[in-house]
Image 1 (cartoon, helix red, strand yellow):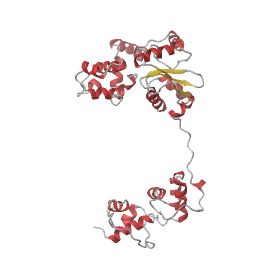
Image 2: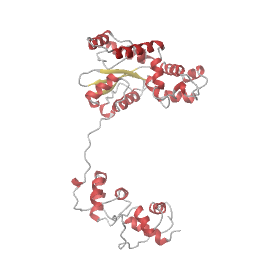
Image 3: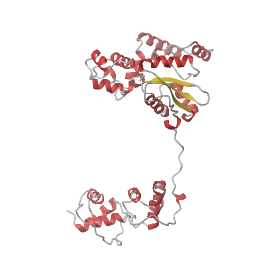
Image 4: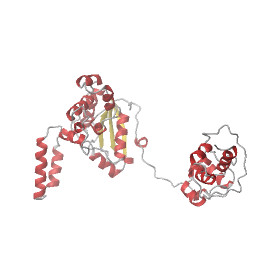
Length: 357
């Protein structure tokens, strides 16, 4: 049990700016006990009184901060780079922020000091691109409702056209993946890498009922002035895994490979890959994406109640606008909570890119 003298000795040493560790070592009191006294978790009923600690010099070399330094820290606060200040004055991080919060040296007010802020000023960081900075909201469009949006290149005016049940959430999803360089659309990601996010605009352009999202998206891609060169799928109604190449794409691929000489090894690998693809059904690539990199995912998990085909069917039903109750009737083994979590993106995260909400 600490005496009143020990409690107030801890408080007075702390007020001088000493850290918890040197106080604990000097008084041979556990750190947790010193911390509880310092932050007033215990012994609140013990009144504070002043103890002269001028003759006590702890081994840390900290404490006895000058009024100039305390005034300087309190005046500039978070504009100061702590690392630079610590190198010169050997001040702990906890003491630095305690002074800013007015928990230490409360009697010293910001006043005149002879320390130059330029020596300790934080370095200016490059302005990071944010969604708010490149988001162009239109008053005529409700961006928290369903509708169509574009991601447009300001330099060449090429764009990606998409639709969603919630435009703002979908654009935020695009932005986060593009910023992390992990977007599933490699054409759009390559353009972002080349031109930079700050040269793109994220624009909601029209609202429509959920069931007409894909139709309006297709209409805008085919008949509007938007140059949708960053879209992969030709038909919005079909998943990108079942798309067919346009004649222009076929020509470009043919031109790139014209005159190319294939080695015997490359021919065998291509032959094997084509043979394997023919052996699988149309959902082969979807199934592979479910289990890729984790042999215990999907139907391979011994605790799984659903096959990969059933998971894909549930995703397709969510995309088509079916109610959760209707989906539950078709899949009685799963709960409404799970279906709601899937729809809101809280589970089956490896399949969220298939959901077009």
